[in-house]
Length: 248
Image 1: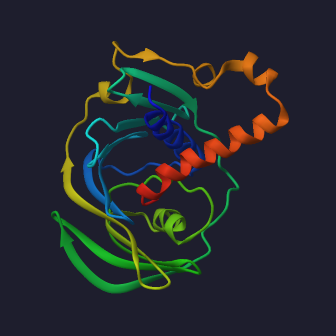
Image 2: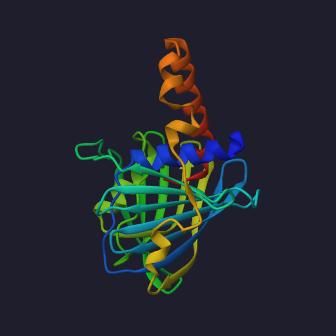
């Protein structure tokens, strides 16, 4: 597996493992998004929900081979990362995030409404010291997954919107200078029954061990403290490549 692909996998596992993962509501189906981040990096995301199960598919618009799928079963706190190109998957526990950091920005309802993809949405604006997030969201669609790492305008809005019981259909994050950093726009809302097979790894996929791929326990024991620090820095670098392309 190439380092770039592995970086995406590791970054996704770190991001989704750090957040407050919640799901709820009677909505079952698929919501598709188009994402544009700073530097005009584009990607498409499919967000599928069925009871306590969530499947997120991320496809790079710039590289058709760059695709990752994250599947979460919140009932048993388990997360899967699927790599279709390599037909492999990894399994990881979703950590308990009770008592985690709380959003500390200002959340304001503008009073504006619109109909987006057949759903009545209302605009909310979330402001922090780092910037502003404009969110058009609809009720009755469950709680949007948060992949929050540390507080900040581009992270906290997901926690804030969860508390309102709203689901985002359009989001624009701007910094304090008014520069647009990230946009997320829903392109499809399809309420439908989803097959259970979407939330388990395909039978032809091979399970990979994260520790084994990254060097294994024996190699880690032989590593010096400086090497461990270097490894931590590499993980942060890999994460930084992925995080800017996600709006949460």
